[in-house]
Amino acid sequence: MKLTIIHPAVYVIYYLLLVILAFLYNDPYYMISFLICVSALIMLQGISREFKNVIQFFIPMSLLIIILNPLVAQVGTTRIYVLGSYFITLEALVYGILMSLSLLIILLLFASYNRAVSYQEMLYLFSKRFPHISMIIVMALRFIPLLSYRLTEVNKISRFNQENQGNQKTESRVDKIKKTAQMLAVVVSWSLEESMLTAKSMKARGYGIMKRTSYLSYKLRKIDYLFILVISATTLICTMGLANGFGRIEIYPTLHFSVHESMFNPYYFSFLFLLLPLIYLEFKERLIWH
Image (cartoon, rainbow, N blue to C red; front, side, top):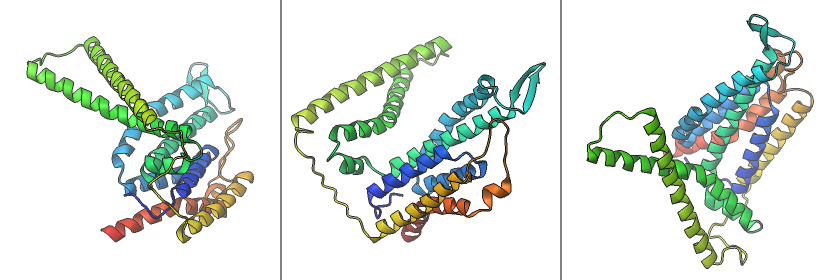
């Protein structure tokens, strides 16, 4: 579901703060709570398909990180012997798991952000002062889903042609690789050709010559100021907690972790309160419409 009651600039600030906190926190309880809240927000936003795509992309990458980090960085004091005298360290293994979890949270935040802030709203925010940079950002955010969609369309046409030609023979692995390479070449050529047409059209319309105007118009309202007050206060408390060591655990040289220190403190509850506003608004919107 798409909320329209919050100013897009507030959305940008909020998601930027969440991404920064995803980099800073490495406590398992904080990160698991972070992951649960972001997943709940995505489900309420109605983008479960994007969630599945992120998970499918994330699983092989996370396994690669978890396997390679202990093999490459044998740092730490707690040794786990794998084969004979060869060992990996518990600290490196935990660090790889937490790194992959942080990456998953950031990917989900970007998926949620793409749902919360449209391309038109991003252009409205940034195009007046940074027309070229804003256009590059919008095109970059649009590029991956567009390529995925076009690859699906080309794949459908290829299957349709095979069915019409009656070609039902089993393809070898080399043939599948060649077919995939041909489809990728078609998709890239299609995208480059359309980008040239778009660039010519923008140049003909005089994009970037004059100060950009927009048909969208947003004003900060009471709910925006309240939202800013909430995220400012909770972010300040979370920053104080990080400065005092809450939300971060010692991994190197020896893993040190305490459940009581992680969860039962005001900094943890303030962090949870920071994650709840959008979940509350999305849930409230669903109750209103359903």
